[in-house]
Length: 204
View 1 (cartoon, rainbow, N blue to C red):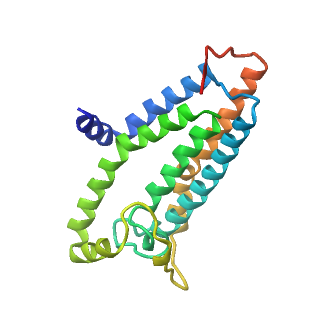
View 2: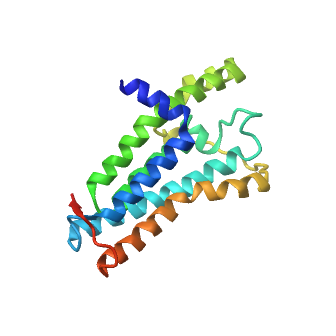
View 3: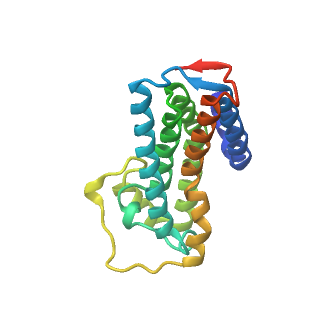
């Protein structure tokens, strides 16, 4: 059953993401952190901000390398020298960061579960497509490059790299959406604090 849900979610990733984002925002609107005002809340928020910052910079870094090359060449330098799916790795950090920015562990776990539901299937499909497109070159790259978690000792980068600035600019909106979500979370928290919106439930 879980495998079926994962496949269905991955097959309709945009729709699934929009439904999930709506559910997440509704949850943020209707709940508040049980740790509100405590040192733990500050620690959770700070940890979330750090992860969102790393995720945003990391996703920009990945986008820089694939702008203009995504379907034409196998990228194996920069972040792609450390693991085969650095964009998804940084996205994973961003998901956790946004969850922690709510100052709850519950919503952080909620974000992790969504990622694990959708993205393993997406990654498997991309690997299959890349193997068909690039053949032995991709298989050799796969054999010596970790799949998801970066191996920093493998890092290598070129002295110069040609980037398509138009494509890079077009991807920037998608890259920084974690930052926008944190902004929305902060606005909702302010509305809760001023009792403009009354939260219905406190969650850990």
